[in-house]
Amino acid sequence: MNTATVIEHFKPAPLMALSVLDALARALRTDGQFPPPLGEIRCEITAATAPAARTFDPPRVLHAFRNRSGYLVLDGTYVDSAEPARRWPLGPGTYRVRVRGDYYQDAELALIWPPPEGVRRIDVPQPQANDAGSVTLLPGPAYPLPDVTTSRFDLGPTLLRGSALGADGTPLPGIRVEALNIGPPFLAPAALPAIGDWPFLVADTDARGEWALVLPDRRYFDNTPEIASQPVIKPISVRIAYPGGAVVRQRNVRLGSETALKNTALRGQVLGRGGTPVAGAVISTSVNARRSKSRADGTWFLYFDLNQVAVPNLTVTATTPAGATATVAAIALQPEAVVVVPTFHIP
Image (cartoon, rainbow, N blue to C red; front, side, top):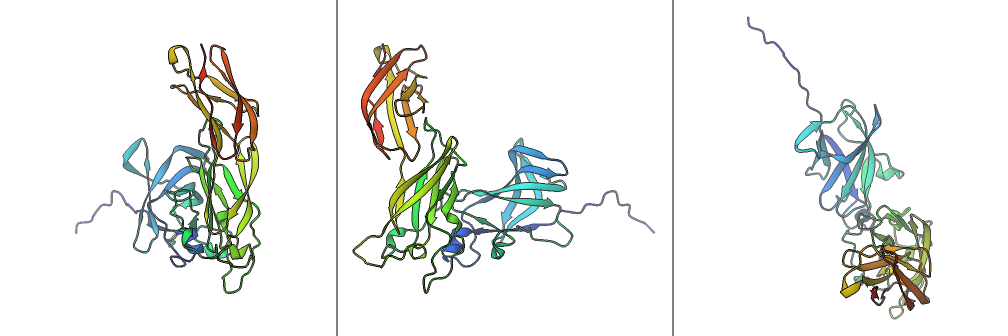
């Protein structure tokens, strides 16, 4: 009787389901209790925490696909950017995984691999009991936010948008932005369901420095009577945690509408002999210590924090790499406006 010799025993890794939800769609009750996220969702391994601590830069991308039930399915393999055509098996350990999509803020979870025997769904502990087992993605600046122009009596959500930029206009990613004077706790209007903590009052800026906050239906925090001919205006305070220190900007906002908090900036150009652009000229002002530099074509931008007030008589100075200087005085700096400074001509 012939017998077979087992040379190698292969046991494939189990397919694991990860529940990923659109947090705003669920809060607005527009797509059921478990609304799937929009667009492509990616899972990236940013670090291993066990058995040995290690970070991955660039991150390793877990192979995943969306099944018919809306779950994100992981098969325990990943792609290394050095060999994008090859998939590698994920070794045993605990990993920090970043979940991201084009329309959402990043979320993180701890992934233990391989999963316990018989387990087919990745557990994601959350602060709220009804979120246990799911990654809830908060909307990012690119999220197709609801059209607030169709709401009557200034009801419906209120949208606030803006961007965080460095002095030279460089985007500042990962900056925390939050609305301060809204809640929780919230009011409990009759005939409206409770909304919980409403996590959309806080956001982190994306790679472009942009941010978006979503305030709930105004009846949860403002009980002004509904009069069609009178818009409801409320001062909203927004806190931006810049690297040099947090600032707070208060803005009168029409509730139930979309408002952009624009940046305050100066712009201009530095030219040398014969109109030649001067690159690397340091731009400074008399209002504070912020600095910027002119670009290769001589143009420059100088951005201020979001709480910058008006300055009626500002002096702007350009200092070339060779030490030559030029000054323009009597510039009126206006909040939420980009003011053009006359061109510097340095002989």
